[in-house]
Amino acid sequence: MQNLVQEYKQSLKWVEEAKDTASDEDKVYLGSMASDLRYALEWMQTGRRPGHRRGIERRAAYQIEQPLDPLVMQSFVAESTTSHTGITEYEKESIKEALSNLTDREREIYILIRGQCFSRQDAAKMLGVKKGTINKILTRCDEKIKIKKSTSLFCQPLAN
Image (spheres, rainbow, N blue to C red):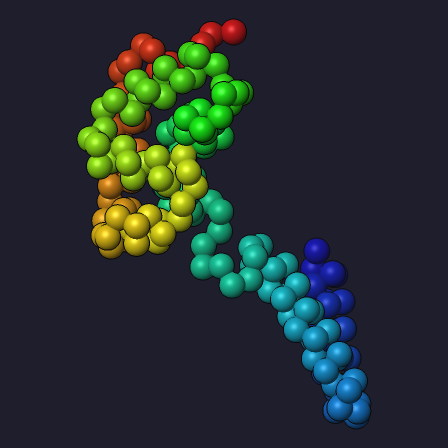
């Protein structure tokens, strides 16, 4: 890997030197090449995508774990508008059981975000609240659903 990094550094040096004597049109292309080389170098040296403050191993909890499968949740919400959603009756009842622990407001927000795939910003605008409020309510919903899934026999996955 170190050899590859050295080759990229050498190529970057050549491109920078070539920019000094190049025409204006060529400087645009050489600048683009230099930018791409710097991007690749940073990625190789840090081990993560440039521009990101955190690696995937340090994501926030709400970015890593979803208490209910997002695709099943979306199919559950789509059930009200279509006749065939592709989820089983057990999955439907399991979701209803998990959502039964939430207040009406929490359920509304949870379904908007997780079921209908609205962004948190859009949901906040629709409901006339701040985005931070949406985040707090979603965190509370996730905790309630996680507790419900661990204590309810009906929310447990089926054994194969």
